[in-house]
Image (cartoon, rainbow, N blue to C red; front, top):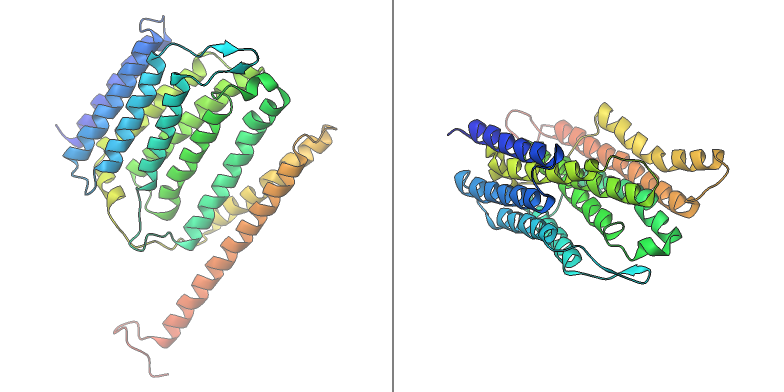
Length: 324
């Protein structure tokens, strides 16, 4: 069976599980999660072997993280004592799955000098700061206003963990080639974050979201990670390659500019509503984003100036120093 047929079959099975769970409740929640987790883990292990990844252990670690997360859904839900939720085996399993997935994603896209291209690293830091701001506004700050929510890891710790996974996966796309496997890993992490944020917003009463929306996002994250391992481009994620220097194209320039303006825009919106709820955090993140944007432009200008100087002093045909 070709790689395209394998991926198509996998997506079809994942879609059947999703449809059976969301329509009519044919599959109980714990059964659907076990099927999704086991299927994604099996696809990851099979993909690492079939595509002959040079280093298989990061993919095996990712598969193990998905199995642990799926097992957490088969464990009875947490109990409560007073106003704080007890740390249960379910929460421990979920948090362990975040650690396992993060350790796997950190081993993908490594450069030969164990570093990243400066421009790509700055882009990753900007994404991380934006994710922190998003999680703060939707999960952390509301939890601080409600003591009952501080003891619920699913409303605070889970969004933080999934945001870190998104930042780690975004590094693969921002510092290396945008292969289908890298994009699917980023899509899986993004779906996980979307599910955690939707769950946090729904349970806190901030946003009336359908009850099935978080489940849809969480199941989609399993499917994306399994499909990433089945795609032939996954083998390149574990190969040691030179760090790539990303140029600041016009599109990327506007993206960097918009990122730097997010925090001031939110601050202006809250000020217009007559209540600035996140003033210090918005001011801090705005300053950090602005500094990162300036550093990004300066890094690109430095790279381009060095490139021009090299061309002026070097013969393009032989690579030797020019007569001048």
